[in-house]
Length: 297
Ligand code: RIB
Image (cartoon, rainbow, N blue to C red; front, top):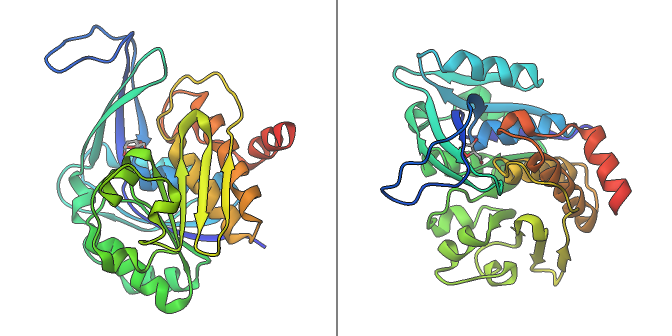
């Protein structure tokens, strides 16, 4: 069975500079090469899900500037259905990214067109209702995420929310989430204190916590607790590693694979992504995820 995934989320053009170290506030650091890479958590996760074997529709917005076309082309080239990608007046979303030699990054996002994704069309709603999984993040208006989740809920489509970037969320939205994916910082903001996945079960029925090179943890209200390591890799740039993880997780979830296997497979996808520079450009294909998964599981 092919996993049908609808992503409602952001698309950015990433302006990336490598540097020996990340600057502290007020500091100027002389960096290396400059590259532009299509990114945005929504588009990255849509591409990640498509490369992981899903049939994916992306609902998002780009501007009417020169940054829009590379993003359209990139999504289409990955096999993502961009029928739900609007063009709105004004600038596209942009992310300024610095990456250091330890593969750490700093990211500032100017939402641009992403802030104009304020309503779903009839076709978007129909696609969400037809899908196995709705996958959202928090780089678009939270009202739009709630609208998409409402449609999914009514149709029995599984709602996976990657609550990134970190923010407090309305209880009403959280009550519609089936699977929450967060890192440690995002969990702390949601819970109001340092929190593990089990501390999030008051908010959602299932919580996945990504922990970078330390892998991922899972807690479910059914009593399931999992702690999964990540395969050791030589990290070059961790940008979009969480997106690769989440896109792969959405596909494996839609395929109905066991949770432990789903987490390990998603960890393999995240690890592979960290070995390459850039966002969507570094998201792995299914065959490579399978290979690393089998070598290491
Ligand atoms: O998760 C990585 C992404 O965050 C980048 O591609 C950047 O665009 C920001 O949205």
